[in-house]
Amino acid sequence: MAFRRLWLILALALVPPLFASPAPAATEPRQFVVVYVELLPADTIRGAQKLEQLAGLAQKAAGFIRFDVNQQIGRPNFFSLVEVWRNATAYQNFLAAARTKTVLNALDRLLEAPLDERPGNLVE
Image 1 (cartoon, one colour):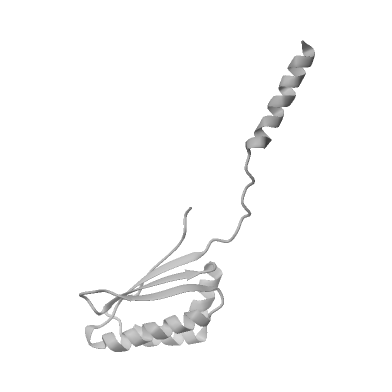
Image 2: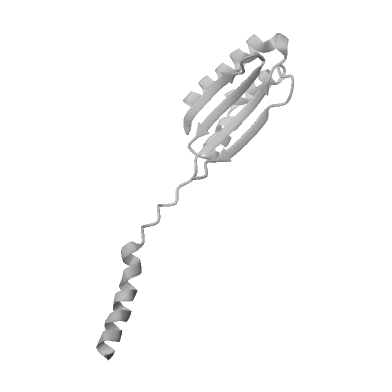
């Protein structure tokens, strides 16, 4: 009888590891950013060129994954920038780069409203 109890305890102790799945390795989450841009109507073309220039700089930056410039249909002076970066550090480094700052400063004079930046991480 004692042997049966010992066997049952041993069996029950071994069952949970059989069904446990290994935990995924902790990785730094990707940085997702959406920026809404409202240009002065008279400066839409120049502003769009600056946004494309910004996208070009992003493509050369370390940690770049994706950078899309989208123009709103029906309101041509409204844009959204959809960005994906390897991590938050890569995004911050891109913003801190001298060339990026130069383009953002030039873009600032063409804006109807301040840039509406919404960073976040993908939740799975």
